Length: 216
Image (cartoon, rainbow, N blue to C red; front, side, top):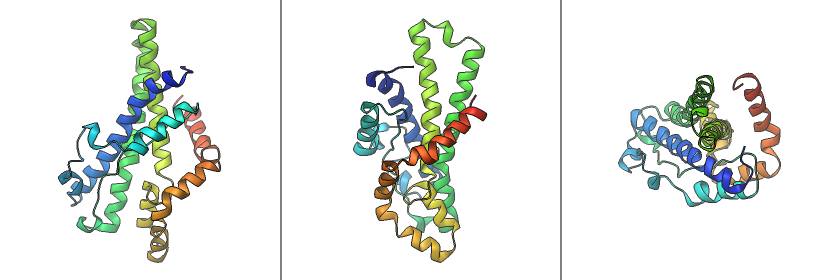
């Protein structure tokens, strides 16, 4: 396992970019299928990373985490534009649009885990020179971790995170309106929760359970 910030960055940044870009593409694709072409018409349903990079979420946040020696690295991409008014059933369809991102990350985590298991079982990684084999192994290992963290983090019930959008779609109208009003302050709320140990209290125990009972 790499210990230096540079080593961690080399392994995590490619996996993170793929994870956050496909996460946002999934939102745009789901919205397009449900009647809102905004993301497609904006050129956001594309694998071109330049269309998705957000200076703060994609560069600064993961960079600070890597340099600070954080055991978990995550970030985000520029949110795809979605106009709920274009959706055939705005309230219900926004749930599916929001779910598309975390589901994509879970699929990516499972895919990376399958490659890891098969790679070990069939000596794929050991068939390369040691340095290359370890690089490939840890790249997929970090891909599992990063995608699980992104899925869990985005499911927190705080708008504008996906979990918040899902909660707005599921709650009774009055409660949904009250929660939706938090969206302008959502990022500040999330930052405060992270500062006060959200990862240690909520996300880390779930990750430990998953790596103990599922991704073993």
